[in-house]
Image (tube, rainbow, N blue to C red; front, top):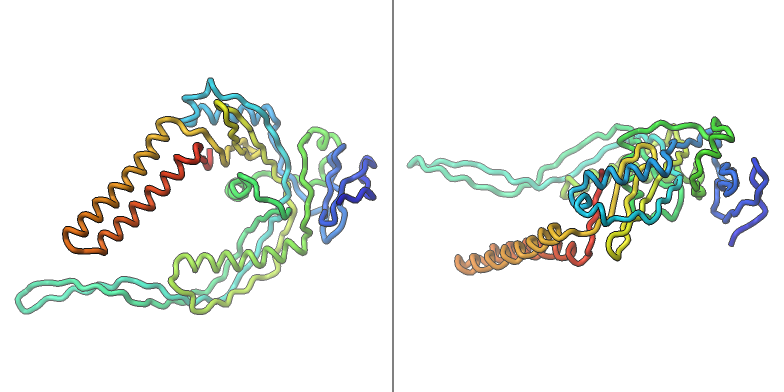
Length: 330
């Protein structure tokens, strides 16, 4: 339920505010209004965005470079182009501590008998390691609770790689606000909540790093300090919806440089043939593996080949059934 008691500090227009809203953006003048929560307005920044026409040009340039889309360019119709600013919390978290972990490694030794014959024997051994962690992580996370939309993770990764120019919101005059002409999504998480999540995320980053390379974590004692240089950053995200035949697809662009970060695309006949080829390859691997294993009386070979073949066939089969493909990056 919306509460109508709040008015814009700049133009006096009514604001639609939910109990979770921390910063409400005026739908009339675009000014960000601090509603509640622990948030310092001087720590709010915005990444300037390209306009709709520039994004449209970026889309068609992407089509020209895309192997599949270029072939159907004349049949593509842009239906709509939408853009908005989404809020993200950014900060640095220093982590420090100890990690002990176990890795299963294959150890081989070569033996030579009295006749000069050599034989190599291998066996699996447990190797124990200890690392001291001492580093600062640069983290970014959504300032809204509902962020499960296509391209959001890709926008975050692209922001981290490109480090675009940021402008403090307090430094933007009224004319600059008028020129933005983009919806700004409301913030639902204040600075204290963001810092708490950053500390948890920092520990998770380190834990996941060791979980991916270790067979077992024996001891994990890593602490995260209070995040520093925290700020709320508004990132521009554009979505181009386009039609091909009877289906609608979309491409997501970073507003600051026009880079396509994610896209759904129609599946061309050539691409469909490639996926079908992958299905057939998987079936052949499974069939030949089972036959060979039976011939040499080795059930392990047959089971392994059947497993690999099933995974390949399943993966490419799903791609065929989806009827579209997903592209990451430009």
